[in-house]
Amino acid sequence: MTLALVEHDDGTPTELSLELLSLARQLAAAADEPVVAAVFGEGAEATAATLGDHGVDAVRPVTHANLDGYAPRAWAESLVQLADELSPEAVLAPGSDRGQEVMAHVGASLDRPVAANCLTVAPGAAYELTRQRWGGSLVEHARLESDPKLLTAAAHELAIEPVDGGGEATVEPFEPTLEADHLAVRVARFEESDEEGVPLGEARVVVSGGRGVGGPEGYEPLEALADLLGGTVGASRAAVNEGWRPHADQVGLTGAKISPDIYIACGISGAIQHMVGCKGAKSILAINTDPDAAIMGKADWAVVGDLHEVVPAVVEAIRNGD
Image (tube, rainbow, N blue to C red; front, top):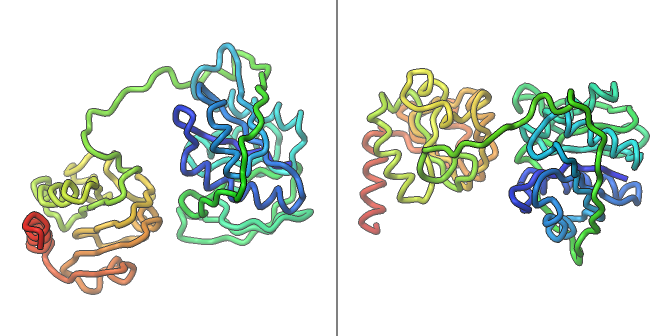
């Protein structure tokens, strides 16, 4: 049996969780065993229909009187206790911040290794796997030998694949035994961002600017282009360090890792730390005065030119319907 941690927003499984289920289903099928999903929070039971369409056989909503929000140790302890009941061959989590944090606690609790950011997994007595290291700049081949095997999936690297003829998963609540220490760290409240527009991680189009933008005022045409395309604006670390954009806009190893349909990079050199953040994009368009900039060789389309001339021209052409 394969046990998977599934995250959701008001009953809708997250994209990273659905990616994870493609891997979980593969491992379970190799052993001819079911996939069981551990789901936390209000709306957990509502995930059953969608999860059934993605190969989940049973949903185990985790319920506890004091567990009303995200609490990493409490989530981990709940998974440990559920694993003790189910004896899974593997316990998996999505490659999200929460998934990685929870699995680190699970590994520490069980004194087992965790293989993080997995790309491929060949099941067997030992799992032969490939996984991302150094922010995705290196792919490592490894062997995982433990019981159970603990893994997280690399974010935005696995295809979401619904199953044919999937039905609604069964639902059986699970109540863990938690102590005060397990709940010492937890989310107390959420505060809505005052930023307008499409969130960076959800945007299908991202128009991003780097040092070549020249200053905060240089983002005005980028914002106009993003608005016209129904997208949002991002930034390189260099631009954020200069104070031109907030850290929430940063794309890269120490910022957001995104997977838009198209990523338009304006005045960005394309250092590997930045490419870690945008390599999940389906297509990349680079605009740069330097034809030898690293990003020009990694882009699907490249425009050699001054972004201060190219971007306004594109904005005008779109507005004119050209």
